[in-house]
Length: 367
Image (cartoon, rainbow, N blue to C red; front, side):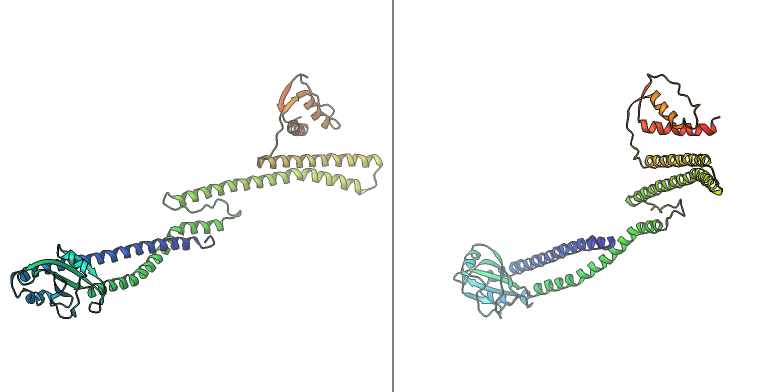
């Protein structure tokens, strides 16, 4: 997954979440619709039973009237009347004379109203919903009136709903995924703009910055951080350019002097003393080049925060004497005037380098 583009990963995550939401919603709608169907069926059974019970209990012909009631003309409703022994006293045509209640269910139904669901039978393939109500008649005594409804239409409605959800769900998921991909692309558009601008930034075009989105969000803060980084890089690059320019300028003079000394020494025959003078002069210029190289190394390390400093107690007179001794062969007039007891804490190598640079500049320019 780490190699999948971000917008595709966002779309995939969005699609998975939408799949869960649609699945939960579909199950909820299906169960709710089934519950409403069952509630409607039970309400119809109670209404039919309430209408038939007075008819059955009030006359000798009540049973015949009940099974021929206009309430039962639909193909889903039916009636069966059982006596206390479980024998069918009357029934709607088509039930094939089979009792709808078992012995235990009949015993319960003789005491109080019983509501139950019966599984599929040869007559009722999709099963049925039954309400059994005890009724006392003048002809048969205590009987149980069973008003039922087939579950064919209920099963058909649930099947149609399941098919509709199965068709609409994937289509809704596809539309949501496409919309999610578009939203992810729109959300990442500022990142793409910053990427293109970053690709165009080069050392030849300093000062260019990444575009910042208008919203004060994570992307804007990222852009501000990257712009600050670019500014620091430009400053570092400018310092490097200045360092190279200064180094080139400083190296040009001793190299030119050294080249001149060597060319003069080679132009004609020289005596041994003249050659020694030329070599001493060349050696002096080499010392200057070495000192410049040391200076540049110190500057580079200082810029990189890698300049090591070793702090010890230093005798100032000894430190200044070492600096004087470096220049004594060419400049014997340099004097050290300092108390022999003066001490300081510092890095002797760095301080000697620093003082050497000061003296080296003071000799030609300090009169």
